[in-house]
Image (tube, rainbow, N blue to C red; front, side, top):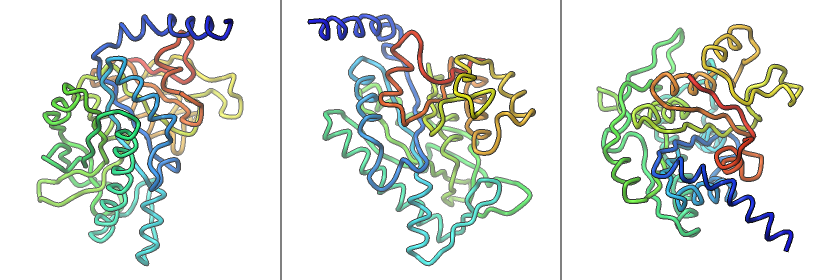
Amino acid sequence: MKAAIKKSEVLIEALPYIRKFFEKTIVIKYGGAAVEEKGIEKGILEDIIFMNYAGMRPIIVHGGGPYISKMMKRSGLEPRFIGGRRVTDAQTVHIIDRALRTINKKIVGTLKNMGAKAFGMSGKENGMIKVKKLKCEHDLGFVGEVTSVDTTVVKRLIKDNIIPVIYPLGIGRDGNTYNVNADDVASSLATALKAEKFVLLTNVNGIMKDRKDPKTLYDTIKAPEVERLIKRNIVNAGMIPKARACINATKGGVKKAHILNAGVPHALLLEIFTDEGIGTEIVK
């Protein structure tokens, strides 16, 4: 009986959040080592399906860097990175497309097997993600930065209660396919949709004053303060593009951005449907 009462208390706590976020768009970015050819962990997908059945409109943007590198090595190519970005020639673009399409199909298939409606696609399809060649000190090849996002197809899907599952390729003015950072694609999509939330799932608990001390985790932080932490090198290395993606999303009209540890069971539900949350919430 006590266990049943405890469950009912959890559901009652979630009720105001279900009401608040009903029919609201949530863009969820998931990638890194956790995304292999097997797709995304079922626990994360369970959370997303729960959100979908609760009336929210989740959208998944996924990467798959380690699997791309594995496929490159199978083809006799050695992955190279400059400033955290993959050097991408014409052959590598095709490998990236194949690798991410494999992961995408796995995610979509798993969602369907779990009872959800889902549709997979790349950002280059229907000209959804338009890019220009990324200009930096070194020529990275076919690496692009987002210039515009066409949300027509995505809006149609979420209106029909279908979960879009998107992988980060873009199309340039020259008609070529470009590799795009998944954080940037997700952030740009959230901005274009004026999403309620942008959620970035990663392998850390969030933004901390001291990375070695979990007690220094910021529950809520304003975007300008995150910029200051970057300048002071407290937020550094691989966390910088993630933090900047969240900052850009809030600047672009997204109400809140979140950085969560995907390794925590049901991280999404704990952050969105409970009073305390578990990660870092970034506001404008």
